[in-house]
Each structure stands twice: as C-alpha cells, then as structure tokens.
Length: 250
Image (tube, rainbow, N blue to C red; front, side, top):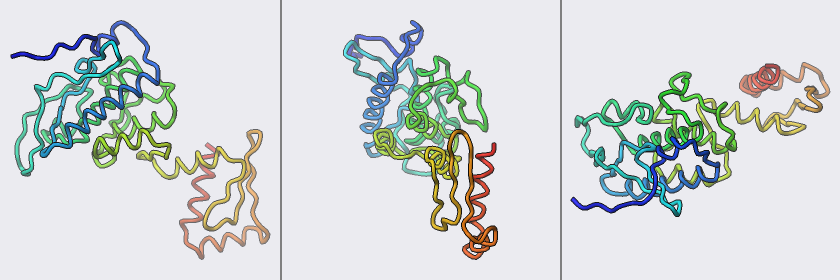
C-alpha cells in the first residue's frame, strides 16, 4: 500500500509541546475541517469519518490541515434497522455513535470536542459535565459567537446540533446570534442588558432603564392597573416581564 507522506505534526503532538493556539489559529483549523467534512458528506451516501480527534489531524508547514486515518469510515446506510460496528474515541464521539447510529452531525460533534481540546488543553473526557454537556466556557477566552458555536456543535441532543457541515460553517462565518438549549430568554436578556432602555414588544407598557449598576422600572400612567392590558393580551406578556426581572435580580 502506497500513501502520501504529509510533512508536519498532528494537533495532538502540537498540544504535547504545550504550544498555545490563538483564536485565529483555531478558527482557521475549524474552517478547514468543515471544508473536508462538506466534501465527505456531499457523497451519496454520505461518508462519515467517525474518529475526528487531534491525533488524526495533521498541520503542515504552510498551516494546511489534513484529516487522516480513515479506518473508521462508514458510508451512511440508506436502510433503517442496519446494525453498525461501534467505533470512535471516548470524549470525541457523541452518544448516538456509541449506539451505532452515526450521522453527519456526529462528525461535527467530534470536531467541536477537538477544538475545545485545543482551546483548553484538556481532553473532552477530562472536562466537567453538567446535564451531559461539556463545561468549558470558563476555561476559554474566545469571542462569545465562537463559544456559542462550540456549545451548539457539541450539544448532547442530536436535534439541537447543526445538522450538517454546510449549516455549521455558515453559522460560524455569520455574525447572527446562535441559539443554544437555553435559547430565547437568555439571548433577549443579553440584548436587554447591553441597552440603556429596553422597550418590550409588542406590548411596550413598561420601560426598563439601566445605568450605573442600577435598574429602574417605569410603569406608564395608570399605574399597576395598566397590567390588566397584559392579561387581556395574554399571560405570556406578563410572564416575559417577570422572567426578565427575576434574571436581572439574580
């Protein structure tokens, strides 16, 4: 068997030299792997690598990335009920892969776990977990958009992950908000916190003003009786106000 020789070091070897990756380095690596996955997954049936991890990614002298070791590759079966051989590396392989049901999003999870390893210097298997989710946010200093992207790509629930590499890359390159499992309320609270005045929509009866660490809530003319309008519009409006107020107080 003749194979191409790739001069360079695996990401695992680079990690062992204690080299620190910059966020720019990490983003470049992420985009290159996504391009490889887009190529593999566009085949019919999709080609799944199933073992993406630092030791299977080689970086050459020009910072070009190579995905190696296709011994665990599987063509996505088109027929349900087929039993697959379970492969993968603990910490990088998602739960559905150990059930023998790898899909395109399974490779994305492995990529996310790999990037988290590069950022934290810790194997995903050694990171603390909460609700079966990797807890790494306090260990990294990446921009919020990229951190949110990593949290979404490593969601335990398959349905909450990006479904394919094209979707994942578009989200990575965009500046739009990425919603995670705690989604809407958290994002709305961040939007509120970054503004001095927040006018809830569509029933803007209350103004919330933040300045110098103090929170002021102004109720329009009519006092608390105006809250009846919220109930007439539906309890969801009032619950929204109460939820935001509770979060701020915490």
